[in-house]
Image (cartoon, rainbow, N blue to C red; front, side, top):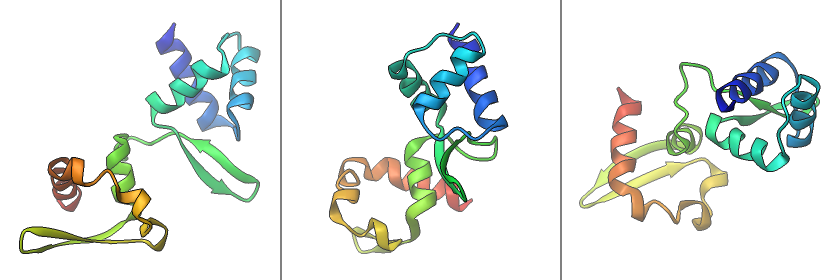
Length: 123
C-alpha cells in the first residue's frame, strides 16, 4: 500500500500543480487512495519532495533522477557557494539567506558528513 501511495503521489506531483498537503490529500482521495494529512506529510518528507516557485505560487516538485534526495545534499547544493580550507577550519561561503547562524547550527555536529558530501558534489 505504501509503495502504491508513493507512486500515486509522485504521479500527481509530476502531472499537476499541487500547492498544499490538503490538495494532495484530496487528489489522492479522488484517485481512490485514502490517506490522512499526517500520512501525506510523512510521505512528502520520505519522497524528498520540495517546493518550487511558479507564477501561481509554490508547488510541490519531485526530485528527478539526477538530483540527490538526501536533505543535507540538497541544502548544500542550494545554499553553498564555496568551501575553502583555512588551517584546521573550513570557510563556508553561502548565499545571503544562509548567513544567519540559526541555519548553520547543525554543521559542527556533521562536519565529517559535510566534507564527504562536498567532495562528492565537486566530482
